[in-house]
Image 1 (cartoon, rainbow, N blue to C red):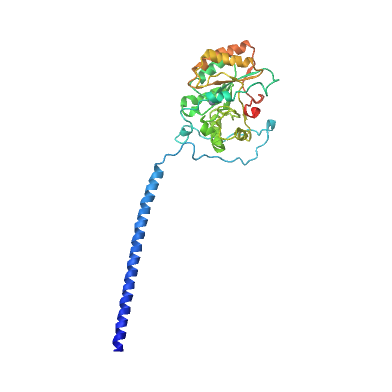
Image 2: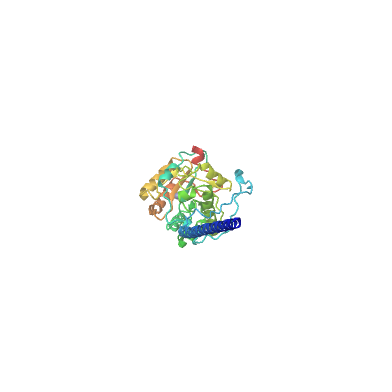
Length: 337
Ligand SMILES: [Zn+2]
């Protein structure tokens, strides 16, 4: 009797063990199944994400900005400003990589140019009377015509150029012609798009390197004079202007604003007569004048005004010169703030 009971209990144990094993296997199967379903859905999610990233267009100008902090201590040159060293010769020809950096349309200076007009002769007061004619925004389809007129009047000027030659191959020889005919070539940013030039200091340096390299590659001249788009008194820079100015100074560059404005920014539609009058009236109020004119495809009136301006200046016996190392800097920002 006892033996039969023991035998029955043993069978019950075996049955219970078998049931537990079955349940365990079932649980394992369910867990495995859930895991498989989850990893499968992750793969679908990953695939979707990859596709989405691949389709996202790259924002031009915001990626691959090769800014290298200047760690080399620059040697001091004239006036305590470091000597301007030659940039590396690089290929800045039109390519898929460089094209987005030079937009088809540059920002219009009309509103900003009034801000950077220097009121008065300081710090040029006391200098001999001189007149510096400067052209911003070129090269353009009119630069050759401007150069022809300057040659006819035997006058040297200063051209603060942009990267427009990267949009139009026919403009590329113009950089060299400016230099060959004895004019001064300066930088007016590469893109002339305010948000890119003044985005932050890395973007400013990137844009600066591009225009500097372009000018050097086209002309063999290392440019060292800069004109801020909208002038140093602009109201659109995202950082205080001292910071951009420091970037220029740390690399041996100087910047120039203006104290006479022809009023010929692309947004304005002044007649040639008005541009001549604005310019000559401005010169009459200054001992030393730095005149701002524009060299853009939309400024035919500036070209038409140029002979009248030059004749008016000659009548006044003006000493017309291109900016060089002896030209005292004319600063709106540092002198007015
Ligand atoms: Zn400009």
